[in-house]
Length: 386
Image (cartoon, rainbow, N blue to C red):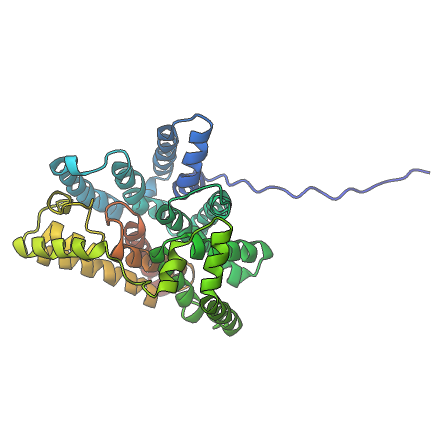
């Protein structure tokens, strides 16, 4: 008698064939991947070169990517930024800030426009990069033998954590729920206040406004956890201390000065003084670096724009940024609204109190989403009229 055993077919691993996926993935996963490259003796510059190569190849193989808006964006932004760099080069940290300008902020626009409206491609790559980033960084934060820069850590995981949280509540997968809970705990305990506020703002918008259902059960659960956390915050701080861990955020909350930043007061006073000195014209692109003393940049997008471009042009730029962000939050739907809330809400809050407009990608991505959405609406209306 012949005995036949039927083995289950192995599940196929879907490997994306579109080179744009890898360009977008490398871009969003650049922080952990560059460190992994460096840990095995490969210079980070080589990783950045590979990332740029994938982006360039994606553009070359998808000729429709070089649309008029992409050309206009870079024809305007590149000369302005290069002019600012050459005029203020001695005030710019070349080892990090130039990388941020040319490898994070500027590519943000083309990364979105590469998709040509195929947001599924963008989201798939972003989600994959988010898993990698959280799995790489969170264990370091939870290990007391490592000492991470709390500010850098918070912003390394903020966007990835927002992405995984979004899918935890929309798709209810166990993996996403567990990872978002662990990531949230690490952000609260080991992260920075600004990143935490941006994360809370994104969660609030997602649960209350960006959903067909209001998720009252999740809102009630998170409210209960938050209240329990605040009630027992001093006990938690002591417990962490006994474990050899410290939390700047928890200390600030327990001391009642969560919103107070003594280091920003003298900085903003300087900004106000120099704005009055050159209110109409400002000091030119990146010019704020050459006037303020003791700080690398204003740590406020409002002061930065007015210092660099004057009250009139600076206000126009700020108005355009706010308009595009609010338009996408209020008018767009589905994946467009998710991505807009992800980058605009977290970005505008961060740039209001920290970092520099020139060094992060929130605004360039928001503007690219706005242009993509407007083109999508135009094509949809045109097809309906045919």
